[in-house]
Amino acid sequence: QVQLVESGGGLVQAGGSLRLSCAASGSISYIRDMGWYRQAPGKQRDLVAIVTEGGRTNYADSVKGRFTISRDNAKNTVYLQMHSLKPDDTAVYYCNAHIVINFPTIEIIWGQGIQVTVSS
Image (cartoon, rainbow, N blue to C red):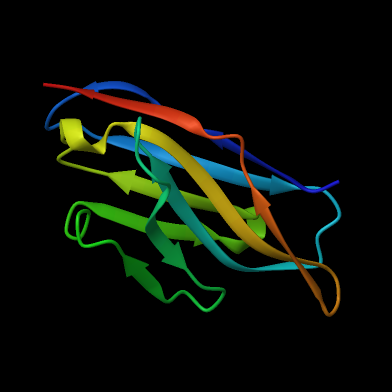
């Protein structure tokens, strides 16, 4: 089966930086869109950033200018570089990918989630 594994989370002080990684593994033909979502306690899961197969990006207004999403297609990996972190960024971050396993079928895969905690 195909799975997504996140890494790079943890505890950081306000103003600091973290880099999240998400690697896809399994029987993959190719990956189309990849993205990051986050869910804070008591809140819904919201989009953080998306990068398409062609490299186009889109960001939530709350992270523009601070976060950068990128991908390495050779490694089937997507990254989220986070700078100037704020306590409001504290959440569980989830990796998401639209993966072509058997053309033309596209499956939407989610990672387990990884905790990011920003102290004030």
